[in-house]
Image 1 (cartoon, one colour):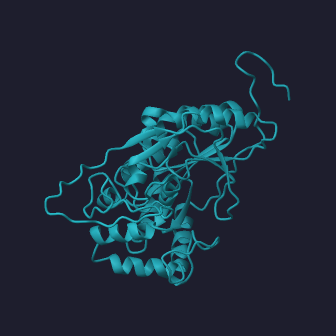
Image 2 (image 1 turned 135 degrees about the vertical axis):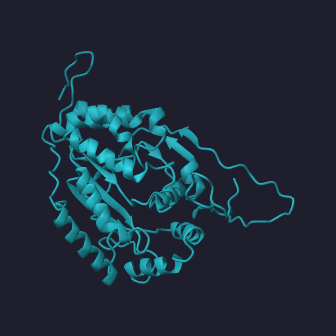
Image 3 (image 1 turned 135 degrees about the horizontal axis):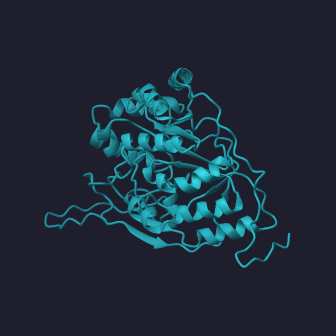
Length: 355
């Protein structure tokens, strides 16, 4: 794959495919007059065998300790995605590789069942698909997320979901059953109501209006649903903050959150290239404001600062967010998921558990 494309590809967010930060070599482009352009990269899906699927973290910036991701990489192609650099651990690029060379975990449901059955397991809510979207297009064919939800329902394991896909509606039957017992909640990521901006910024994700309909559908089914305005990019989608929250409240959302733009590792270069290509007249201003959020740097990775930023611009965003949440009723605290109902189910052959 050409690692140095300069023109946007239809349906793709990144403009290039830079070498990963762990790779021993760096490739430089050689322009030849008679060079034949490479075809646009197709999406590939490769099985990844796993023995365990629950990840644990102790970050004070996120409201969960356990998470589970059935896919690596994400075809939504969101140019801003903080998870892009994780593809470099696979020897791949955080650019086009991240959105075209995907991996799925067919053993995930069985592995989850085994982990939940372990004597050492202590029930805590599991965040599903927080690194890459559990309802990305591959889920329509693979159905891994639904299979994982079925396991969690059987164990009465509480689960939270963050997604920008309306495909979550497919699993309303499971989610509504779990929600009635205090075991499930959904957060829909909503970044803009501008279809053109959404098409450029997150090319294969569900359209904004359709996400709002999904919010309404989930709320109507009795499932606790909130919205997450993430990332909030100054001078790009940040001016829509009040409008986004108002539309979410009108659709039935009961809570809201936000995260400012994060640009770890090579993501800062990918985002700069994208910004210069699509919004050249705003590029310098956007990046100046982004740096003002992170102490003069493109990104401040320190806990307590990386999600909300610091400084005058960060303070103003926080004040606007809080005020609009109060006006729209999105400042209600979401009910905690119930861990007291967890139990290891009887096996299908009727054998009772030994402990």
